[in-house]
Image 1 (tube, rainbow, N blue to C red):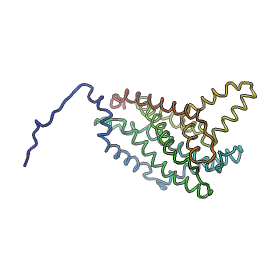
Image 2: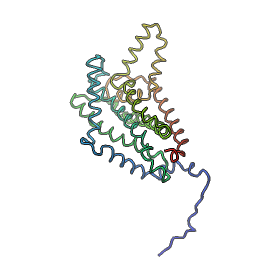
Image 3: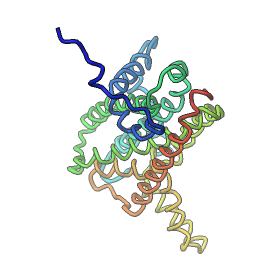
Image 4: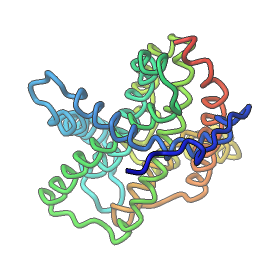
Length: 295
């Protein structure tokens, strides 16, 4: 029987080695991704009566309320040739994914305090696993969209082949904002109360229950009435700084036939999304060393 010879292995301990190998460690600890994601999925609907059905019930009820309020009461038109309920639900899909990813990831580090304080691993794995868990809810909710289209006998546009690209943008937006708030929540627990407000407020300033084109149209008319039409483009650009504006518009453009897409505003949302993501990774990496002491 051949015995292991310790002389075959060399162990180097260098200052800053952990930093230089950080991104390689993410791959080395990939099994931890699976374990934490599976753990989050198991506890997500634990001890609930309806279980995973909540993934469908919440967007379905929100769609009904938004359709009644914005179409039935406010009389707003739909986007393209889609029934209003379908247009709302297409907007709800990325928003629900973003909201779920934000709420789950923001408390993920604080909820894993025991794990963080005992062993080393790239802390980035914990919030990322929470966001991946939100993808499962998205897929379940997407099935309801297919059922809704069948009920309304609505055929999606051929541009649906571009949907994975907009889903990737939605993931980057959720990852960037979620990562930033997760790191801040470790030191400043005020964010535990701020994040629900952001989600509640965000659904009304994002084009979830209405079309972005309605915002552009009504804003333009209002500015003309005030003889300030030169201000319209700036206000529209300010509106598009919300990364979810571009994501939701992209979802509707790819699924709904004849839906209009303002590519200039989409570019603004994409740039904002990438800036937030870049700063979030920088801030997370900068504060990561202190998590075990502060948490």
